[in-house]
Image 1 (cartoon, rainbow, N blue to C red):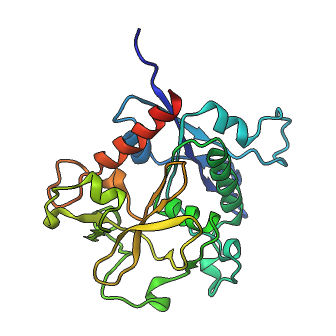
Image 2: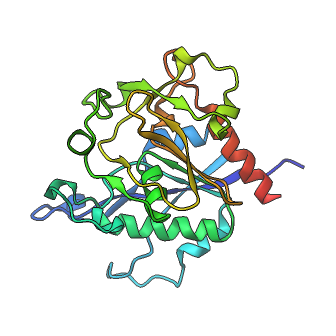
Length: 262
């Protein structure tokens, strides 16, 4: 009998209504980026976007909760997107443009805790890594260029074509996944201006930016598989010899998903 595909949830990006606009721009939109969905689907996986369950939309919905998604799905990927709100880690935004999206923060933190509660694996990508850190009580740099000046450029207009080196922490999970990797290929697509500042509880750093020591991957120390990478593995095509092949990370996440399912 064929094994059923794994069911992986991906948290939603949120576009909020724009004042004075009509049509779709006047509505709340929830979506996922194709590249992250297709990265997960490169294995035997069914992908489901997990919408918010907030009330106030004018529609009458059932009593479905985020905990129901945690029960029904096998694992969770927290995708990238907008800044986190400094209010989510007890700070005021230093600039209005760094105010982030507190609504998405609350939704994703609740979703994360529901998956942790039922001990199902979670993988955070870029913003997802930051959210894991904040949900576990950590804080962020609101803006790296002004709060932690560095020779490393972590944000660039070239977006998914911008990369910089990464170094794995000895004896960490990533170091174990890549025991014989050529250091020259340890480059990651890094697109962010916020990053982990104070590490959350029950977390360890698993990779850093070697030139400035900034955390580039964090990992949970509890029984639940919990990994956050500050880079975008979905932008790393395996045929590109300059970039880290991120399929071992996906395979390790899914290995824990299968172990938890069976």
